[in-house]
Structures are given as C-alpha cells and as structure tokens.
Image (tube, rainbow, N blue to C red; front, side, top):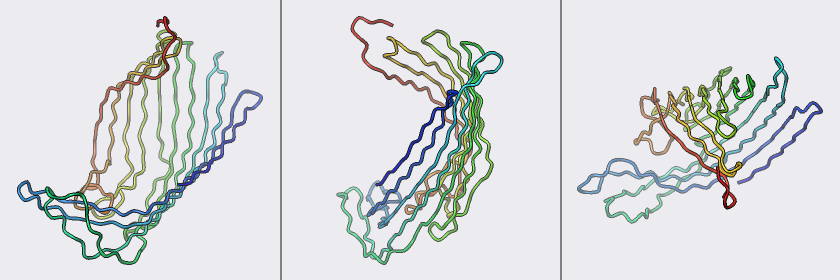
Amino acid sequence: MQNQYLDLIHTFANGWTAKINVNRNVNEADLLLVYLFGTVDKTTGLGLGASPYNADTERDQISYSAQLTGAYSLLDREHEFTLGVIESRQDFDSRTRARSNVAPVGNFFEWDGSYPQPDWGASATAVDTTVDQTGYYAATRLSLTDDLKVIIGGRVADWEQSGVSYGAAANYGDSGVVVPYAGVLYDLTENHRVYASYTEIFKPQNNQDANLNYLDPIVGESREVGIKSRFFNDALHTNVAYFIALQDNLAQTDGHCPMVRRSSPTGKRKGRRARALKSKWWGESPPAGMSA
C-alpha cells in the first residue's frame, strides 16, 4: 500500500481561507481464496460447491479538492459560506487465473478448513475499469438570531465508469445530479443544542446483477433530529439522535454467483427504510470535584 498527499492552506487578509488537497492511494494484492456456495444438507452435510480464486489486483486512486470558506455580512448579521470542488479518478485492474480439477467440498460437518489447490492456468484480465467522479458543492450557514442557525447547501455530482468487467462492457454514468441539504440548529442553553437535518442520497456503486449489468446508483433521502450537549467545561460531549433513511437500488447477495459481486437476479431492491436511535459520548476525565 502506498499513500502520498499534499495539503496547502492559505488565509487571506479578510479572514477567508482557501484549502487545496491532493491525495493518492495505491493498493496491490495477491489473492488466493476459496468461496463456498450452496445449501448444506442437515443430514449428510453435502450440498456446498467450491470456487477457488487466484488473482492479482491493483487499485490506483487519486483525488483533488479545493475549498474556500469565510464569513460575510447580511442584514446586520455575520454568516458563513463554503464553496468547493472534489475530483477523483480510480483505476482498477484484476488479473485472474483459470482453474481446473476443482476438488469437492464433501461433508461440511467434517471439514477442517483446509482445501487443496486446483490446477491453475494462465493469468488473464478479468476487470479493467476507470471511474471518474466530480462534485461541486456550496453551503451557507445563516445566523438568524444568536441562538438560531439555518444551513442550506447542495452538491452537483458527475460520475462516469468505463472499461471491461468479466467480459462485459462497464460503461455507465450520470451527469448533473443535484443533491440538496438543509439543516436547522437551535441553542437551548450554552451547553445544549437541538438540530434537525435533511439530505438526499446519491451514491454510485460497482455491484452487478446476474446478467453482469451494473446497478443504478443508490438514491434516497435521510432525515435526522438530535441534541448535542457539553458537560464539565467541555470535558464531556454527547450526541443523541434519531434518523430515518430511505434508499433505493440497494444490492442483494446472489448466492449462485460466488465469483462476482452481484445483486439478486432482479437487479436491485427498492424502498429500503432504516430507522435508528444513536448515542455518542466522547471527551476526557474531568478534574476531581468538578460538576456539570
């Protein structure tokens, strides 16, 4: 694994700040695995098939980002503004080996975890893809009163994938997808703040269906309400929140396709709703005798 990065930060005379980041990650792997698939017979322990896998992979990703942040005055109050762009390219290459003389799994209840290697053939390209993503975003935090803040923002996303994956063309993409965001914050006291937020979801994915077609990006929306608190002169911070997320196009595992990351034969799952109550606590031990 290799990682190189560069960060440049400049503060202007008016207090605005510009940040530029360049980050590159290279991951290489030599994989020797065996996938088991099927259904185990409760009586005989038979029913599983084996799919040995031998591959050399390389993932090379480079990203660039630029951001400008600062304060501005409007209607006799000071507000905050952020403007930025993120661009990335990911090249993925996987070379796999054909196999023959694959040994049976046998009785799974008697399996000790070992498995003999098959006869491996020559290496050939299985996946050779490039993914380009660009995002432009802007947001403002409006200070309506000393206690009430409103955040409004959005992102415009472009993404494109090209290449070949397991013999099928992998050319997909979307352009000009708008992803809005809005939030409200209210300070109940100096140490307690309630908030609510809403955002839409757009997330490209590399899962495939049973016909090797790439699934559409995950789309949906997320809502969250919560309260953030501080105790013991900021020694302890807490966040308790309830959120609801609705997502379409989520992949489901197809047990008959062990060698490729795929979804169910129907391609995607629509209307998955998730609800959760989460609590987060962090900080440091307060001095003895200190109270909230």
